[in-house]
Length: 332
Ligand code: UDP
View 1 (cartoon, rainbow, N blue to C red):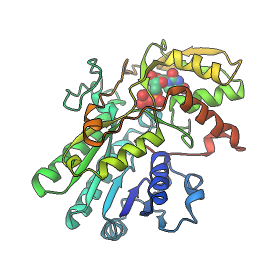
View 2: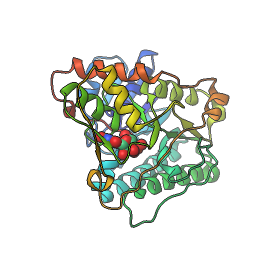
View 3: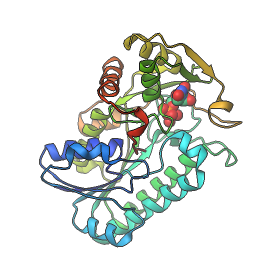
View 4: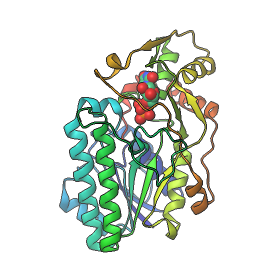
């Protein structure tokens, strides 16, 4: 099959490209390198079947040509990371809403399959874990910048599902939960690369808030396997599907585990949310996916254990000679 991956030089996009190229598919990448990086795809550049285009999804002519040449479009290009969202809300909203609109419009003209990446952020402050795909989205007020990300992604979902309903465009909406692994940078605030880097550098590991908030971390290899299987499953079309791991850990416990596995002497420090993000910042206390639907559709459940994930991320940072923040990523 021929794939177009928007955001293909980002963290998840580059892993997906690698997976698809390895199984013999043709892959075109479109990335403006805003948060993605050439470093992420350097090892793929000599692969037969790869083409890459360093441009924006705002370039509608190029987008139309690339859509024309593809069977499936995986739309991963997005403004990503809570820190970036708090700092650049205009960019977040415009990139997420306009980008998806362009992709859906271009794909619709040619009736191509579109996989669009949404996020577990859309569940917002819902406390009823695990989150099922048909659960209510509980967002905070528009005066709190964080929620613009969830709202923009929710609008993307509405738009994608409307294209399916009204124009019969085959869309698959995936809600990605916290995804981690080699090549993810800490630059945009993601917790695991920041903790591992701090631990390896002997610097303080900074836990935001009281550390009792929890997350489930999914290895990017599992995420990519889930995506590939969903694409190969015709019943996925028109559906919203959670993709994540279900092993839950508090952020304080994560800090301790990272410290232990890296045999680090770094202190663990607690930083109030106000200082870490912005005054009045609201966090989600628990975020756990229900992955029954993913399993029912594909027979697959992500389940790389957290210890193994931490070791893989540690090995990645150890193998890099340059500082971690040079390996930029883009994800959802
Ligand atoms: N976090 C932290 N220290 C960091 C970065 C993040 O304690 O250096 C916390 C953050 O406040 C959140 C959790 O770790 O509660 C996960 O943050 P991340 O940005 O990785 O993903 P999110 O789940 O917020 O999208």
